[in-house]
View 1 (cartoon, rainbow, N blue to C red):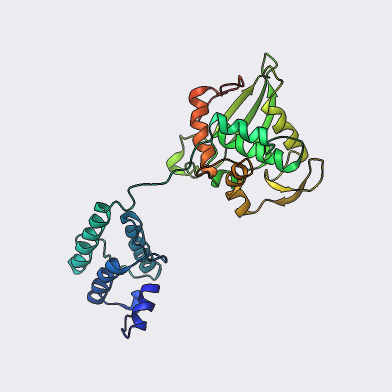
View 2: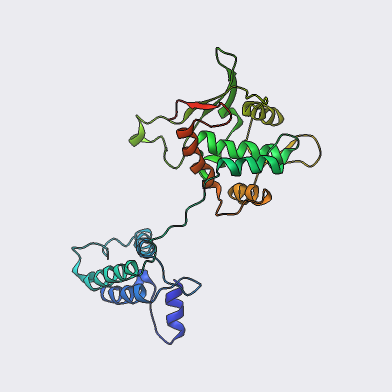
Length: 290
């Protein structure tokens, strides 16, 4: 760890964690808790500090060291360390560290209209169309900031009609951060959502955008692919990179001139608004939210 390297430069001789006996480990860990800092010199929030300690314990387990569990309250060899850790976490909490989490701002109806009016959403070019389906994947189907977008496939979407000839987008989910499909989730269903899209008075229907996008991708393979330059809507076979996917919402809002803390989670927060407000202004609504 960098703390050890820093201390050894000060003419100390601190061994690797896996080589420490219990007494040395107890001493070094409680010193580490008091002295550790971020790269910018600021202290870690209490929960982050605890997770760092958990990471050190996992490191010992990876090294096949199972006779030293410094978080075990019954192991008196590390009582001093645990007392120091507890006191440090309380002290950090009393100063408000970690008590305020900066949440992503939701995209409001007014924000959404501004994005459309700015030309960032649309179907006239590959980038605008991809921006559009990305945002509505978040808003209509509650896709999370990154994990559900990462392995998204065209085959998970289909466009259909109901009895009244209104179009709908049918999305079938797979595994995600909250659904792994393991033994503990035998009775939990993956997402299976139909979003109905009756045309508005001005002829708007989001299903038509999805239909055009899926057709440009050949209705197969990765859902997010690199847009090709030119006036027509075309995409390469190559999937969009990880950094591009993580920065979709920030790029969309920046190009539209919006001010705020916008991340991919902004779309997820907008989804909750949709569910409660039934997509005002468009006549669209969501059924079978799971």
